[in-house]
Length: 184
Image (cartoon, rainbow, N blue to C red):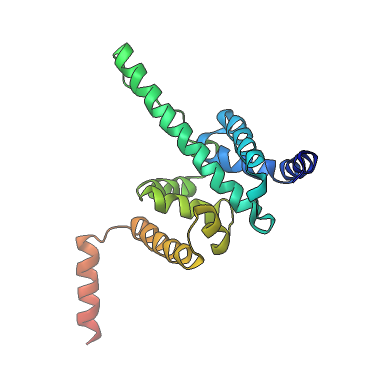
């Protein structure tokens, strides 16, 4: 592809997808760092312009964003550990993006439950709910098969439901037993 064609295509891609990539990043690392991360995503896309599958470009960009955010997270952890060692203070990390996205108490309960899950379950649930990706789009983002994406999403939803389900109490067990005895 000619450099001028590549530049035109990347400019069009940027114009069409920047807001969605920015929102994806902001939901994961907060607004203040999201713009830099989103810009990094398009820098990678520009270097890989010949690899773009224009039919699945949004999930492809989200896959790049996952890598960019993982690199930033590793960098923050290293920086936090270094600061902690140098200052004798505990390491601090950026405020979670959920504090910006989630405001209602019910949502806070769900977010807390999601954080009890493995990171892979967290990511697939966020791709489905926050990014509104379909199973094939999730598969592209995670570089897995559509079948694997469907299975992982199903299992993650089941694990989330289990975490959200309140634990049974002794009084619930005794009421159930009394109902069963009365029903016979």
